[in-house]
Length: 266
Image (cartoon, rainbow, N blue to C red; front, top):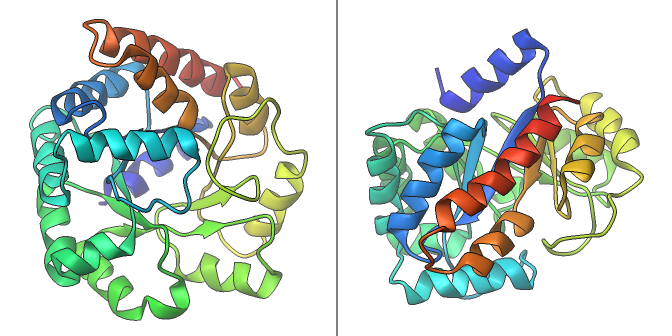
């Protein structure tokens, strides 16, 4: 069974909420990405999202744009990200999702990239700029490889399109709780409960909620309505503050653990 599907099934059986952590692959270097992944697994992270660095990350705010830039500067490529996933798989079975722009998949060769991702140990992909209406071939290749194709639903998504996305998604649905790009916020959106109910009317898939969640208190509040909470920019910001310092992994993991604990206690 796919690791994402398996993890959410286990969380459901145990009556627990999930925690999804996002980091930029190769920020500040791929060796650090591998060490963070292993530490996050031990800290209780349920799913790891790895952002594959791209020169024009249109869905991302400044914090994640800078992480992508640092990833590119450290020499990170899609092939090297897959090699890092394969290295993580030697000691960890944490579910891994690639957060990626379609240009990178197209340049690599779609069929080859999906096949290589599956062989490396990737479990799913969130291809930011590939709408489901144009994704039939991609979805078929993903299904054949045993990977989950994950889509975004936004506050502005019309009901009929929400239904379409829910039917085409696999693994979990990623609900973007705010309009605009990724980034830390001082408070969570007040429509999360209402929107997760609307999404659940169309699917039995878990609903993970992200964009703008920055603190344990916010994560706990969102977990009340979501099946999983996604935190990205706040973790990436911690990585940026640590840089290449020797305390990078323990400091960032301590912050992540505080978020995990807040979600698990909700």
